[in-house]
Image 1 (tube, rainbow, N blue to C red):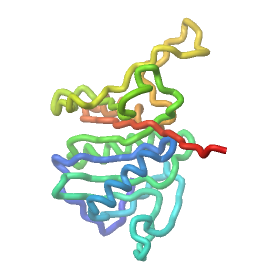
Image 2: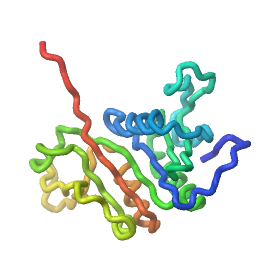
Image 3: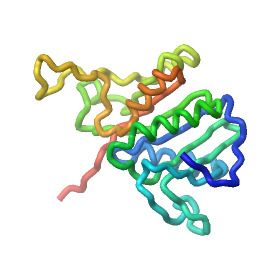
Image 4: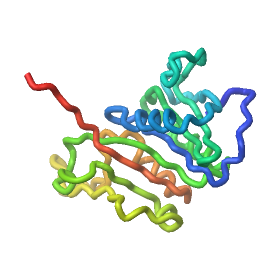
Length: 211
């Protein structure tokens, strides 16, 4: 993962790194755009990673800007202690593991305190307990839950009970985020590295027009 050559990063100790998962409906990326439009943090650098599909375009947050936007950017809000990655492209097939490893190594090398991943999942994959109430769910590493207990209003993602089509001998992973991209793998990688990690998941719901 490479930043622009003249960039000098501040100390990220105590910072939270926010990263969207490329997921169904682009909900995580849209949520990051809301954060950027609200906080208006400083654009530190465009980010280059060989796992991302290259792209280039105008600044979607400022139509008057002459700055080009590429597949990934890094923003920092020092007062809020946030380092925010925005991903505006997809990942090349089979490159997700390398991408996660590099991003998490970057966070560890710079002393970031925790990683928060914003993602989404297919609404039609909901379980019965998810049909009412808030569509928001979370998953957290053991380290984060011990260091910073989450508010009681947060609902943990329920384990999936039924897996139609699988044989009795198959043992699937009960915590799944269908359509959620690399979110669950990121959380598992944070757990393995002893990092504080949090996944915030919403449902992607499509609203159609009546004929």
